Length: 481
Ligand code: P53
Image (cartoon, rainbow, N blue to C red; front, side, top):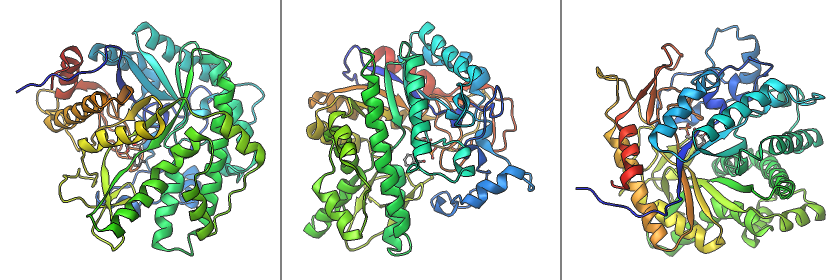
């Protein structure tokens, strides 16, 4: 039985990708390596426990000589660099109205301190944006989506160094100047909460030895908050563009009604997500975070000038990724994995092969929470399901589970809109198969479109529509699930 959903006429439906997961062409037209392109592929032994595959500085350094002849999936992506026209045409054919993508810093300033930006890099993105315009797609750009340039490792610098801050701002200001006519929505950082979040979850495993890491993470994060606010300030010179945030939103429920657990869950919500939105939307550090920092001895290196810039330049809209939810207990319970982020199991939910617990109602819950707290327009910048898939004899994939996943999430989004929440768009992760951010696999597939590469990039790279592609196209026409 079909059900018709209600969405505003101008709702921005689309798909999201990231440069380091799709472009390939890692050494073409002057590009240098990013750290993501230096992580070798490693077969996954246990998909529900991927935190064992941590990358060390040494792994990255070893990859330069690559004596072991390893494979680096993010150097190849899905060759979007050469096939972007074909891909954008497929997005348009599906009826999409917006495309979210990121710009590789290493294409624009290959060495960081280059006197001039790399013309070939700018030209590539200009061509992509022109193509989007031609096909009637709005664009949302993530200025930095995980792919820090390799030169930061060579120079041994971090976010706290003036050199990196200056380079980032130079990069961000330049791409805004160059592309503001084509790109209406800008996100300075992808999943800005991830670094500190991972450090904090490690801290709870081993409080003392990880403390240095956590200190560094929150200070790096602070730098990113300030840089983001500076980008917001800079972008105000262009009237038609807007700058928002991107947070990995992990909805969390108390495991039961024991007030101890409920309180623990509130704290978890505060430190996993609200802290970030609070700083970016309200422009100041909230009391619960100051308390936590004090108790753990985290000292944020913050100036009155930082406070001013944060206060005067709040985010103009909120975007977040939403894949799953977890549970919290104070007393301990069974955990599930999600890219090294541990979350409590929920007996009412099913999980994917990678342990991500599927929870459409959690999306409505999250949308309501964020709207009530911030009253800023909301945009779901990532949502989707990763599955092991193969092409069948008809050159397609019968991905009914993806149709089910998307349909149930769309249904809850339309419920949230009925609740009065202002949601203005949705970009699924992903319109087309890409290399996985966390596990480097091609075989963790999210796309509506299948890409013929395996984990070692054997294959033609050709694109094939999955069943969900046709379903999504029909959904955009009829709004029926
Ligand atoms: P993959 C952790 C938790 C939730 C989302 O992830 C996350 C992460 C970090 O991996 O990342 C986002 O490919 C990210 C995308 C990524 C996508 O989720 O690891 O913004 O780059 O591909 C899915 O399965």
